[in-house]
Image (cartoon, rainbow, N blue to C red; front, side, top):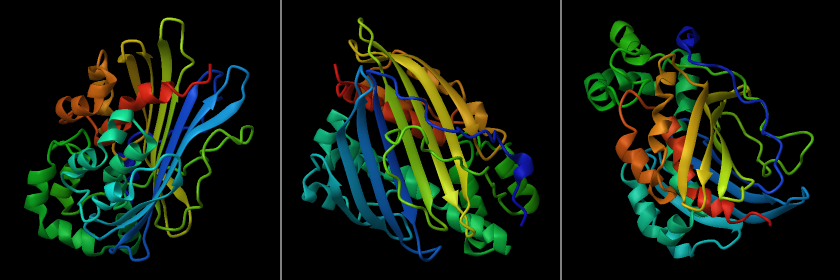
Length: 345
């Protein structure tokens, strides 16, 4: 094993979710991607919940969602359906996405298939939209296994298509900068370095069984994408704090769950105007030491209207001053207004 920990970025994962505040709403989502064959198809279980905490500390699950699906080895969906939850989209809307590739143009397909869910900022839309990143990151599983084994098909393919990879990936983000660790090491050794993150602390709180939704057990080679979005309590002028936690994690063949990417974002919003007032991101776990160079790019969203967040992230947060996974963290801010409306008065 030659995991390139010497080039690692930050390794300080979040220890537990904060205490739920009276008058706040907490959205949590998880997408688990598992595989029997490291290089074959994947199974998907996606779960979400919106939980309101009343002024007296009481809790009410206001919305929930559960999706199951599958994808082929090229990250194209081969199945997708609701499997419980509140107000699910019509089955035909989800079936419309079967056959679509999450590797290119998928979010346009989602917007066309689930336009009402997109506008309403529902759990259903967020879970389907987030399949792009979840399936992409699931590639960590075979990469990690190959590093333990001393090689394999992915490493061989990387060498075979080295020029194409450089042309496609160079400077797309801080970690893939031309002079950063990955491409520099690839140029000198002919092999992309492979990261190995810290052990992932539990996401639940022992003193609060309602802190997060019930998470399935993870099996070896599974990858999980996790989100927590806290909104509120809302002030008299419509101002509200927001607190966001994002984590990608991977379970190795020995059953150890390790963090891959992890960010925390805190800020405030103006719910009356529907805009973001302030944002400050913190890099908690990232694979390469150049990756935290993305911190600060989140400030480009200050003053942005919720409805414009996803478009702004796509158009403005690009290049080596950004990180794909910080961008994914920020996209869910489009739903803040929808989440806040579930608060118990």
